[in-house]
Image 1 (tube, helix red, strand yellow):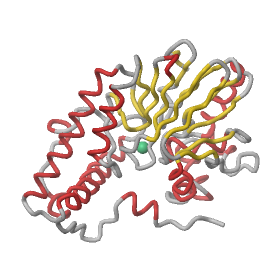
Image 2 (cartoon, helix red, strand yellow):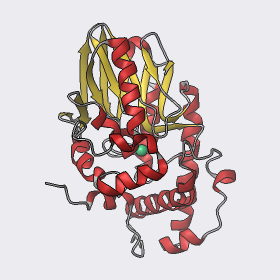
Image 3 (cartoon, helix red, strand yellow):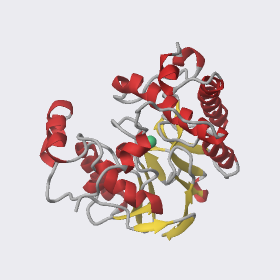
Image 4 (cartoon, protein in one colour):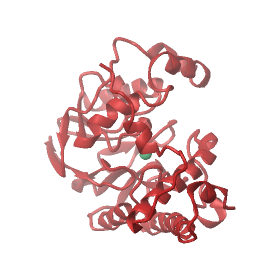
Length: 311
Ligand SMILES: [Zn+2]
């Protein structure tokens, strides 16, 4: 657990996202959760030791590396943007590795220390139930916490600004020093959000993945998004189908995003390149009013939203 400001701490070395905490005079507020069950229960214990109790948990986005650990904070009220509640239920069911027997089998191979915590009746799913549309301001103890709808990386993306600490927590609208995921991003909205972040009174950005950074890093993040967008726009300009676009020679590290994949995500590198291209291809085609020929490829967002919500 690393101190980021007087009362904010965060963790950067877990497998998964960067969970963060604000410690107030009246308990702690959590921002996202460790993905792995054993990390989540250890994280919870450290927070309770320091702050006595946990008042709220705020999710920045629906991706499982940010929300899967919610279950390990039973009884804690979860705050989320309105669109997050639907996706929480769907995403838990989306990947075989997230729920049920396949989840346990996956953990046996990938994280044996977490197996005994999976599927435990003590840790049922913990969806967001305090929902907001544009903005929610919480006054907790001696702190004001501004929870802002910041669509970009996902449509329900949320940033948390803590003015007294000069900190903003962005989820995956910012990846610092690690490969950027744009599998369902609206690139133009995302560029606007990076501009919005510059307007906040902030010294430190806690990104979804990678090290904490100052606002000066936003130029780098913006360039990576523009590189991806420009590359895919050139494919659309040539009239390529998505299959043709996938077949184009591309040196992502040299020409688009110089950073490596972050914690334990290296095996998804090729999947990510295609997911970024496919999403941007579809977004650019739609923006230009030309046919988006995906050739049967299912976009990440459509896959997530196609799932049945379990009873
Ligand atoms: Zn994400």
